[in-house]
Length: 446
Ligand SMILES: Cc1cc2nc3c(=O)[nH]c(=O)nc-3n(C[C@H](O)[C@H](O)[C@H](O)COP(=O)(O)OP(=O)(O)OC[C@H]3O[C@@H](n4cnc5c(N)ncnc54)[C@H](O)[C@@H]3O)c2cc1C
Image (cartoon, rainbow, N blue to C red):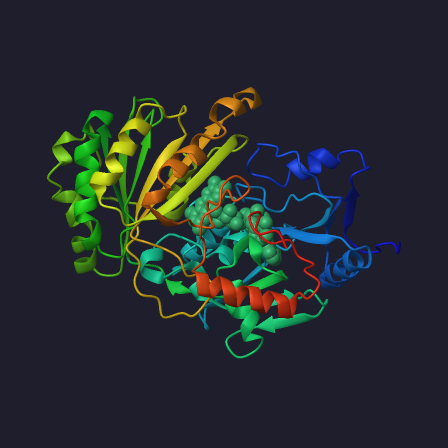
């Protein structure tokens, strides 16, 4: 067996600190018990190429991580070689061209906070720590994403090391098959992304947020109202509701209705906040904020209270267009057995536009429901570990598929890309990765 000689770091199963190194790549501290054979942290592109040649020569599969925020620990696979791209965390912002070149290990929040300071914007994800590598590949539901599109729609090119060990650029005209596949295949992509080229936006003139908080006894009226106003909520609002057993951190069971608004003009701003300001149920809220101006640092801090570090997580999700009358009975029973906060049930008002971009990403629907169960003590895994999956299984007849962002394909499967796009993706994979060097999603071992 040949040796792997690279500039970057290699740690193998036999080395001290291996367990800690693998767990250190993960946001979700629920240890699946799976372990790769070794983890390689490349320093440069030659290191990546050598690692791929090495993996082929020893007949092992490859997986990749950047920020390690896959809830399902998609990169931690048995008998595989893990390439950790966290160190590829450089970025360059080109104001003139309204573009940026970013490494996969760049945190979305790092980029967006930096852009904000320069009056620029990109629809990065809602939490600190989520890196652009996994985020952009799976689609990317980001700030102001209803307006600016899926984050991956704003990827204009990628630098990739292919399964053959070639370093290529992919865009609309060059290696267009890889470009198509890289926008939506998520953890099923078959290449190592070294950099993304992004289209930037001007910072919206109005960045504000309104919150109404309801006691759980108003569950029915809150969801009825949300379903009624949902289709007409302007696309400058990413309206969402979080149901938990302790709203605003210390209060009891309830629902936080939150409307972040990113508007370009005064008229758009007024129109965007109207559904909250004129809400017929707002008087039922025991806590209400006015429409407060905010910035990205404050938005990220608020979001992070729902997703703390060093926790175990069991997460699952569904897209739906089911009538609210069919959803409420489930939400009601769920509200009586929520795991402790910050575990929560997210209702995201999505109502996607018909997308013009032809890309692997292809499955979405009007309402997104995601369950985030979390616990600190590993002894509670038995108690809370399957909460999210069990509920999503019970509601699967109301679902039209799932988001890859919050997948738990190691536990439960459901469509995540349309059938014809999955077929096309399989064909591109068979052509580009003939030996199936790269691991695909948990539910579709290849
Ligand atoms: C707290 C939290 C908040 C989140 N918020 C959002 C949100 O607001 N919007 C949203 O859309 N998603 C969100 N997500 C989901 C998140 O976007 C995905 O889990 C994403 O995959 C994370 O990217 P990563 O690089 O951090 O993760 P990783 O776990 O490193 O990557 C996930 C998978 O992507 C592939 N991959 C990663 N890097 C590369 C690379 N360089 N080349 C090739 N393949 C690669 C691998 O298959 C890997 O297993 C959130 C997740 C968490 C834990």
